[in-house]
Amino acid sequence: MGTRQSNLKTVDYLLIISLLTIFTPIVLFVYRFLDDNRLTSWKWVFADMDAGRIFLILVPGIMLAYLISRLSFFERRPTLLFLSSFVIAAAFWREPEVIVDTSRYFAQAKHLEMYGIGYFISEWGKDIVVWTDLPLVPFLYGLIFRFFGESRLYIQIFTTLLYSLTLVLTYMIGKTLWDEDTGFYAGLLLLGIPYLFTQVPLMLVDVPTMFFLTLSVFTFIKALSQGGLKMTAISSVALFLAFFSKYSTWMMLSVLAVIFVVYLRMEAKTTIKRAGAIALVSLLLIGVAIIFKYDVVSEQIRLLMSYQRPGLRRWGESFTSTFLFQIHPFITVAALPRGSGNSRTSGTRAFGGTQIKSCGSECPKKQAENRWF
Image (cartoon, rainbow, N blue to C red; front, side):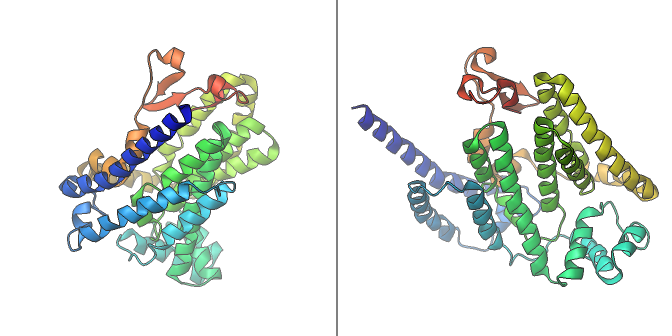
């Protein structure tokens, strides 16, 4: 009797999810005028195409998803995340370069291809015009041009690899902090952000920056939990690379402070020692680079504050566009903070608008304080 009720309950859930999967895109299509995204607005996407063809894909897509869910091939979860994300992202390689910023990154990379690494480093910010760009990603593009050839395909393979590796790193972060299931689902959820797929084929800095930021988070967690000279060095280098990917990353790296505070509550003395070593090495690397290019970096920051910051205040996209159209609404709803009763008894707390949950008895092999950020 209990098994039958369980099966009926499962069928109910499947029907609800299937209906919502069909119904949600229809609602978004009807209200597409609310999407004020400046690059991939639904208003433009469906301006000159038959939306019916897209929606007809949903039905066989749901059937295929159900069949896949019944298979047991998830033992090699990182491999599955990597290969599936790479194949899906590669389907967008035909997308043209639509953002003018690409011309700057191409020009900077072309200098390295033609004149070498030494010239790029010495002339970055001088003969090489850099606007408010940081050097890491154009440097990597230049290496690809120089050693593999000047082809957009090579750039797209590189950015797609970084995107797929970001999913794997997300999986590893989730596995480290919670368990393998959590990490796997977190990686899958990144596949539910359609806006990302429009960025992967482009010769921009955003996807590489996402990778280096995620890498810095993962290596920082491993360095605090494991210690050792090797992990300290790796974490410091990852932090250095993320720092010089894009200026907006500087604010995003503040998440490392949250990680530090959580580990501080577990073992203060060891955490301070390990975090101090990472900070010392990374600040040394960053400091040397900034001193070497102080005039360029200071002028870029002045330009950011005096010109781009006021401009960004006049340019914006609504939360409706971001969290309903450019991210699948299922993910947005799932991310909403939820709790039952008293937060102390339910093991759920809020930190900066993000749900923080301690595993407690649900994760007996882990310490409760180390579970959720």
